[in-house]
Image (tube, rainbow, N blue to C red):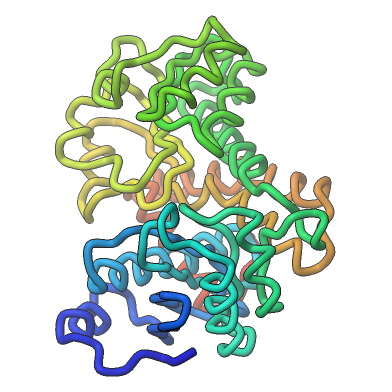
Length: 365
């Protein structure tokens, strides 16, 4: 295992762009025998060891991979601070198509790369990696979470991620309509995979009307066969422009809110599980200008990281669920801060998170 040197000029430019957020450390890892090429970005350890998942994705080039790792790591710092965790933010990306190059040898090599940081970064699952993969990574790295119960882990973190998003929706309903229920509200869920299908169950149990869309037909079919009352939109654009939509829940990849989608939104609330929903700075103001309440993604989708962090101390589901339920209170506090300061909720959340990181304090006030 080697830490890469001789990075291209484009990669170095990406590393030192000021708007990426002043990361503490970025490691480029390579293992030629297994084909591993990975980037580990540590944004902050102000609150403790950096914690964040491993994304396995076929990036177009190394520059794109580095940029994604930097953005995701910074987001984890804010997420962990707002979740009240004693962890800073970090993220790793493995470059390549997991369907083609993922092997146990590659995952073990990646584990050695993480282990070389001596605990400054703790890894877990993300897009393209699963519980079984973390079991393999853990063979060579003890700073691994998201493992199976059979291997001392907590298993699938999507259950509590969905629960946290549901709490964020309840807080949004309380703030906007004066009642923390989704009963008789119409909620559109874009992406009903690992997290989205759990979210649908919460919504239906609370009496909501649900409309879904997903690029994978099998994901849609899994829900409609179980719940024929759930409506299906042909695609995301059809979903977000649907008449009568109260809440839009983006639960797929990031960048869901941009200059094309925001003007077409009919919902009064956006609250979903996807990371990095705001495609670029200024989108949060566009939402506010349209009087659309935005529940910051890294706040409401923190249930999963709460779970994997707890795994490090001996996992207890009830303890984690109780902590994830506080996402309701945290989201409400953000809305109140935004209203008091006259700023969008995303800016209010950033201010609170930055204050906690500056003070070295992870527990929400």
